Image 1 (tube, rainbow, N blue to C red):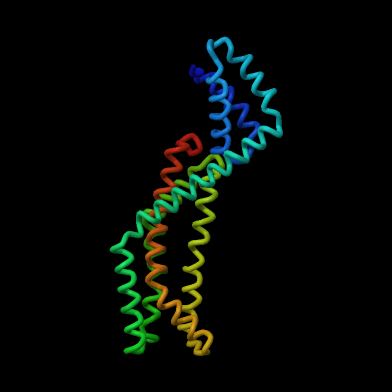
Image 2: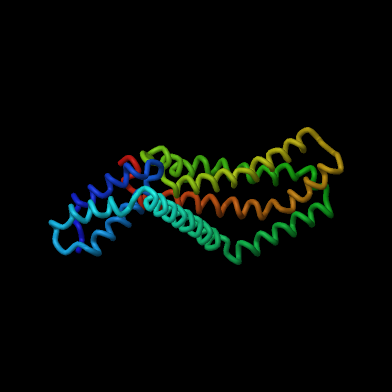
Length: 229
């Protein structure tokens, strides 16, 4: 038997006091307790007794164990969503085009003075990020600003987003080496490896931009009450 909205609210308020960090974990705990009650309730008047029973049965140790399980579940779910979305974006034609671009870069390096034009190749990734920042990326930023409650899922996505910035920083440092005409053997080796890897980095960068934006809005749809209306 389903409980009423008012009864659900009572359970949620109790869970809100218990889970003080992430709103999505709070909702998972609420659903866990609500399911426990609904599996046992036969009449609406039983709610108070069942609710009191569950608060006694679910002592702090049990509650923390459930919170840990729900946290692990949310983490696994959001990581799986990110992985699935990345795989969907990185299709066979895009991979083939990326390898073709790698072959072009290698050919240019072996047959022309690529050092003179490589700076333009390297700045492509920065151009992509700028385009993203002033395009749909701004919508994702606004989505973050609208957030009123902490979400574990959004925290995980943000962590991956920060990691995805690392290649951009790396290529920026490489381009500075070109500007200041660093010619040491160590730098030259790193420079060429970075150049050959650039098409793959661009592919991953484009994939992540799409995945990041879609995931931000999917989280908003899943937890609308965590955002300002």
